[in-house]
Amino acid sequence: ALFIFRRDPEDAVVIGFCCLFSNTLMLGIPITERAFGADALEANFAIIAIHAPICYSIGIAMMEAVRARGSGFNPFKIALQIGRQMARNPLVIALFLGFVVNLGDIPVPGPLMDAVDMMVAASVPAALFAVGGVLVQYKIEGDWRVVLVICCITLLVHPTLVWIFGRFAQLGTGQFRSAMITAAVAPGINTYVFANIYDRAKRVAASSVLMTTSLSLFTVWFWLSILP
Image (cartoon, rainbow, N blue to C red):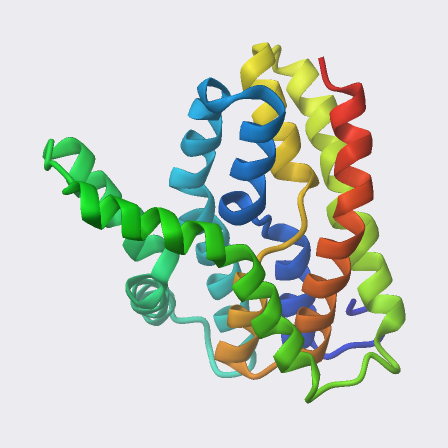
């Protein structure tokens, strides 16, 4: 993004974040469950538990470091910013509450769980509808090459690397499947949220979410067809 497409450093961080983040929750879990059953989700949940905190930490740290160029690098300020953004992120909040409920052995009432299930069923189409609404503000003109590169990296390069590393690490079949599907799905709406937080490359982020999600219907089918 920085050297080939001549984007400024802050835009480059957002573009990198689009290539970093996978939609583990709204695409990874449903696809894995549909393909291999509910018993195959253990590794997915293990990935989700650390995915968002690590990816957001990397993205925020990079953005704050880039924004601080020339004015001195302040690790304390960056750590404070990471903590602030984590505390406001709905996915991180949900993960924390999930840990509390599970480790505290807190029972969830049936009616409340039914309401959660209804929201889960509506989350993917609602999120995509929201991104589509956001895209009204932007035109992909001038950014189509960047978006195309994001599509190639997230849908082809990323799962290829996980295939290589997963084989090298001798992952079990279930772990390998979950890792591959997580790597193969499109970036989540969090990429646009990240872009919106810093008001940088929002058109690229929104367009890449829409295009990669649409194209992943075909690429994920390919990866599923060759998985053990």
